Image (tube, rainbow, N blue to C red; front, side):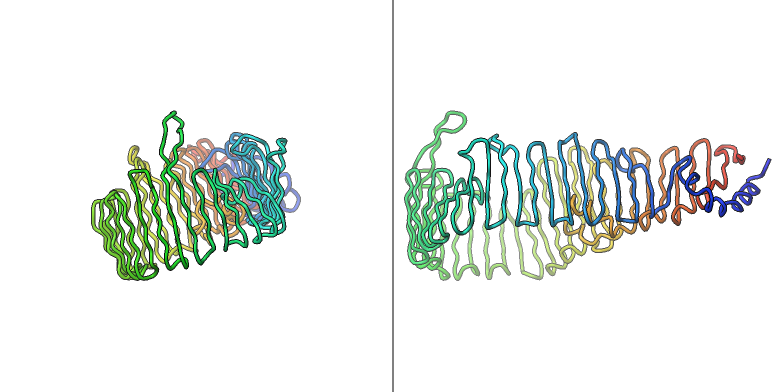
Length: 489
């Protein structure tokens, strides 16, 4: 029987021969081929599934629960998840992207050209094509929903650009838009318009003069109750030098605003009074609804507010401290240090930033369960995450992740290129992993096994409760019992 040392020396002598004549069979036998960063395959640490990586950061294939992803960063990636009926495809993200959720889909080239379709909020199928802002098209089995627009020549658009309908001819010569019951006809936009609606009529010859009046109307809500819709009166002359308006007519929240810019403006209502002199530099606010008084002068450099609803002391850019019952926002030597906190129902969220995105720390706590989620970014050195379930992940380097946190497109297509070090820890499963230079060094551990690989897989180590194994240059070099330490031929 060979001793452990003799077996090691014997197998080391034949490893070079194995490289020459036995590489294919030895490499893929037994526990599989590990040659990171050329090729590596391993179980996921933070989820159930498997990942294959090849050619350094330039290819990976991943299976995670029901989700499947493959990518050739930064060229393209494809992600599909039958459980959520979703598909995503990126080509040179974010140049060309495709997203599908259920029946809804969208192709988008930058922010300019897009194809989309599926069921819209009104539950009718439609296909849309856009070359923004020049061409808009929609086709549906219901021809009443179809539209075509070639801007600025002629067109008709529905449910786009924050309007229910838009029609134009040689824009800006003529354009008509509708939002709910209000129709606005524009001539030589934005200079002249006429506006009509239920109990509403108005006109303007901007910026010289304009006027609008709406009567008090009613509507029936979803409970069959009648609600009052307040009326208003609005007037301007030499906008924005002089304008005044009265809103909430016929309701218990009548609000009057009068402005002679920039000398003086005043707002009066049952809930809030505000007076401004040399707007926006000096102002006084009495907010009876939120229960605070505020003095501004000169705004935005000096702001002082006191009351139950808001307490603020600001001397910009030296310091600011502001808080109320649910939120807090502070800074010192802005933008050197910035702190914010929000407390709402079961969530307590804190964020600290230094020099915008140079350093960022976010903590979210479930106050009912005590579980916490944390994220720390130090651009461009690292990003670190701690999830509610206890999973932790560290990535070095992180060139854009701090500015675009939780961006799936960045994580799929760009993060692999500069992730020199990855460390993951799953305390619930007792699993950990570390990877350096795209698996040039890789180590994976579970409660029952350990695996390690170094230098293109030339050195590999593996152990479980029964056996320990060592490979050199892909050739088995040592094998011994984990409990007894006795070598195995």
